[in-house]
Image 1 (cartoon, rainbow, N blue to C red):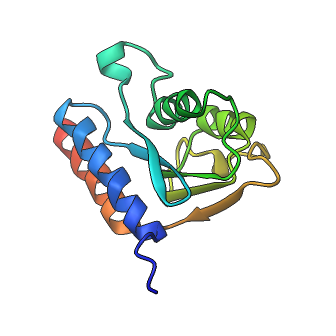
Image 2: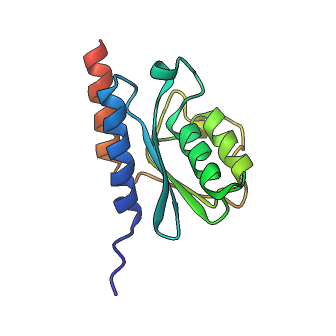
Length: 147
């Protein structure tokens, strides 16, 4: 039987969240947390709306997912996020013990991968470049409109 629940499938769901952020004039980053092929949390950037620099899509998704389980750990779960996590969000993913992080496009200025810090949990599988063009395009269009 064909499994429709692929990384691309869930990244499209994260892109839906990014579009919601765009509608609110937030930086269009979206995230979903998946466990056993089921979305348990959806989130997008809310830094402007909440006037909170920590209200990144990943942080919002982690909070929703941990509330869903009633536990601070997300072992067996996957985070899908349209943009490479920053150092703060990568550090938070470490503390959640999330099993897998999948992101769409790299963040050459603020992404955790461009630092010398090894802040992802050693057991966390990281996959990059899923629907990279779509994830990159929404961000480029947003910032182009701001300039």
